[in-house]
Amino acid sequence: RAKHMGRSAAVRFQPHFERELQHRLTLETELAEALERGQFSMVYQPQVDLETRRIVGLEALVRWNHPQRGRLLPGEFLWVAEGTRLITRIDAWVLRHACLEAKAFGGISLAVNMSPVNLRYPGMAERILDVLRETGFPPERLEIELTESAMLDSGRDVKETLDRLRAHGVRLALDDFGTGHASLLHVRNFPVTKIKIDRSFIANLGVERDAASIVEHVIRLGRSLGITLTAEGVDNLEQVRFLRAFGAQQAQGFLFSAPLPAAAAADLVAQNREQFQTTRRPPGRSV
Ligand code: C2E
Ligand code: MG
Ligand code: MG
Ligand code: MG
Image 1 (cartoon, protein in one colour):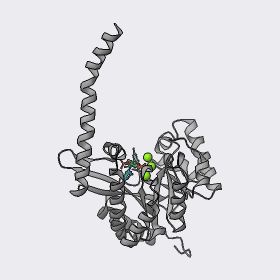
Image 2 (cartoon, rainbow, N blue to C red):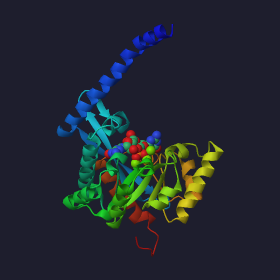
Image 3 (cartoon, rainbow, N blue to C red):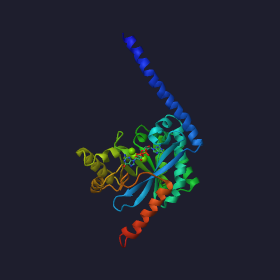
Image 4 (cartoon, rainbow, N blue to C red):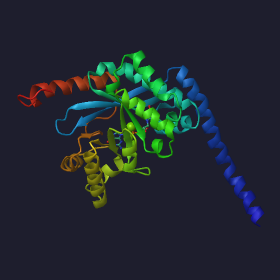
């Protein structure tokens, strides 16, 4: 009977399994071609100073313009790339491309996401610094975003890579903070300069009492360590009020702007700068 059930289960599940495997293999092949065919592009989302409303940085987010399926979000294809060496090639393309496009953004910073897989390559710091040299992008303006998992099970190589980048002025942001095995230990062991509080906590501000107290504590701890706090996924003013009251310095989210193509992002930055210079500049203070 068990044997019979097992077989019928296999019969039922196999088509599904095969479809999934097929989907993965198709994506892998298409991803490899996508790089050569120039099907990737970047969009940029502003990071705003909560005190002044000034745009202080832009986060680069990758998009895949698939010839049949249209514009794909990272969530739809990066999981495949991360299982192969393709993620290293994609992230390398992203870094170079974003550094080139970001030259039109003025003096603000550029945040680039890096898959944890890449950090395990011993030569990664040098590769990143090479891209900065080749593109002429200043290291002090680059911020690399890493999730906690990059640091969690990492050996000495990862720490060396991050220390080396930091020594050259590159900043390091801990992305999606609170979703992994969050620990401020990582913040102390690695040269972290920014914490990005995950949007799931921000979404619950004013909804769930715990969310507010978690966010408040993370902000307080971060501040005491001299680390910049950024809130992700801010989409309403009530969240802004909470964040300012708790002392967060920056925010990012649809309230300020969705991710934009390079030209539109550059326009928005220029417009924001102008507005700041004509109406928001406090008298007697230089910026
Ligand atoms: P992330 O680094 O946490 O990026 C923020 C994501 O939240 C982006 O989604 C952005 O569009 C979305 N978002 C921003 N504001 C709001 C908001 O107010 N509400 C909501 N609901 N969402 C908001 P996206 O572009 O789909 O990126 C998803 C993730 O993919 C990123 O999360 C990042 O982990 C990864 N990713 C994106 N680009 C790259 C890349 O070039 N390389 C690597 N390795 N990962 C990337
Ligand atoms: Mg990010
Ligand atoms: Mg994030
Ligand atoms: Mg996130």
